[in-house]
Structures are given as C-alpha cells and as structure tokens.
Length: 112
Length: 115
Image (cartoon, rainbow over all chains, first blue to last red; front, top):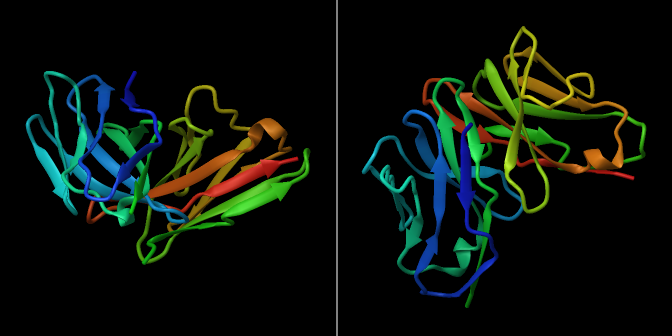
C-alpha cells in the first residue's frame, strides 16, 4: 500500500537558517504529492503541491520538487522566520479514492 | 477564514460514554468527507470516508460499530465514538473536498481524552 516517511522532529533552527525536511514515499501509480502545514491551534492548510514527476511546488518561500527516481518530495526554504514555526506534513493522494496518506509530521521551531 | 469547522476542539469523557464530533463545511457542499485519527508522533491515519446519503466506507481495522459516521446532509458529517475507552484517546480530524476547486480542506481537529 501507499506510505509516506518523513524525518522526525522537532527541527530547531535559528531565524534566517536554511530548512530541509525530508520526505520519501511508496505508492503504486503516479500519485500527487503535497506538503501541509499546521500552525498552533489551527487546521491543516495546503502549503504546496506537485502532480507529476519533476514538478516543483512553491509557496511562501517554500519549495519541493517531485523526484520520481528517488521517490522523494523534500521541503526546503532558504531563510526561515519565527512565523514558520509549525508542524509540516508530507502527503500523497490516491487519485482513485481521493484520500490522502500522510507522513507522521515534523515540528519546526524557529528561534529569533 | 475556516471553510471546514470541527467541533468540539477538545473533549474529556469517562470510559464507557459516547462522544460525538461534528464536521461542517461552511460555505460549500461536501458529498464526501474524510475522518482521520492521529496518535502522538504518528501519521494521520484515514479511518473512513463519509458519503452523504449512504453508508460510510471504513478502512481496514477500523471498527464501524465503535466509530459511527453519519453524513445526513451536504454540509455535516458526524463521528460518534461509542462506549469510549482510554485507548480511543487520540486526535481526530475531518476533511472535505471543495468540489469546484478540487481542494481539500481540514477541520482544526478534536483532541479526545478518555479517562
């Protein structure tokens, strides 16, 4: 079946540091890939997505590239801010069932 | 603003009681909603797919008699945890597709603690 593996947290960085959160997946077919973010006390929000190999999703300075050869979708940001502190979830979409398979989430803490 | 409202955000109950969690789509109709469960430091696991006007589809290993799902209208799905036990303590979260945009929106989740 489908599965998503992402690095364990928490990840603690200083403001303006470079961020990478690793995500790899196992799936049949060609799933769409997503990063969701959950800020304290709020629901999950879509951060970015990619629907096919070599696509790059980007939003709010975050980027992730769909790498089919390495089955990865790593999240990166060049310069993090305190406001980026949140839990980040990598997910893939089973297009047939329209249901998401999530990774375990990675908590990011950015210190001023 | 939130497009999917989930209530309550947290609940504490005694073992053996039942707890109902509501998930509402605020400004769109959702024929399909999804219920997830998350244990600490683990993934969100899909529990069931809630279909308006028909029976929910449960994932393997999820007890349908324990986790009752009702999707009686196009804007409301409810999850009832019946005869709750401490092992049911978890974070429950719902989601719904906004059909025209084909975007998936999530509720803010419900933290259930069973004493």
